Length: 108
Length: 116
Image (cartoon, rainbow over all chains, first blue to last red; front, side, top):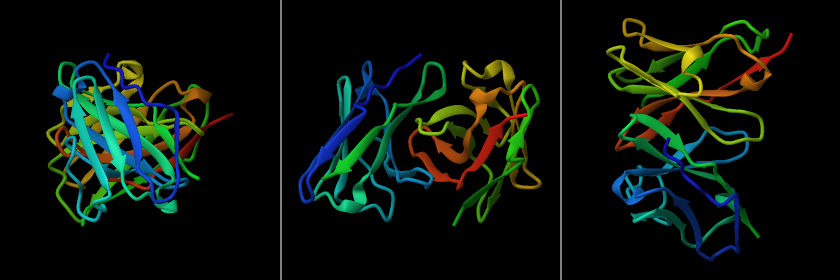
């Protein structure tokens, strides 16, 4: 089965740029989606299809995907961005949905 | 605006069957619909999905115990997980699913505890 690898944690200072990676074999050939989950809340889609943003998601959230790594970038990080972030793909060969293990982002 | 609401018993005894329903309001049920769970303090686990036509796909790790169904007349879909153990204790979410658009609408989730 397809495996998505995320670092368990990341930290960033307010106003700086946070980068969260998601590794997978030839992930660049797949559509990658990113979710933000704050404590006690359901996940929220922040980036879909590698780099597109749902309506209402700030432009500070962006994504890229190439080779074996997809990346979520959060610019001008705010305290409210502190959350768990999950990457996800729909694995075409098995038709299964796969989540990464999640990255806990701390805003110092 | 589409909204999802999960419902079902919050407490299930070991070896019994967990049953949850997700009601779709404010929009069409003509999509793929996933169930996802999150054990306390852990990450997201995809359980499976059902298409409004009734076709399904399940996580291989749960496949032998999972059954999903859809009732288009009631705009709802359901999850059954049999032979539950404490390891099935989790927050269960339903979500609208698309391979290109992601899981773009989520319910608030419902907590299920497996305990005697």
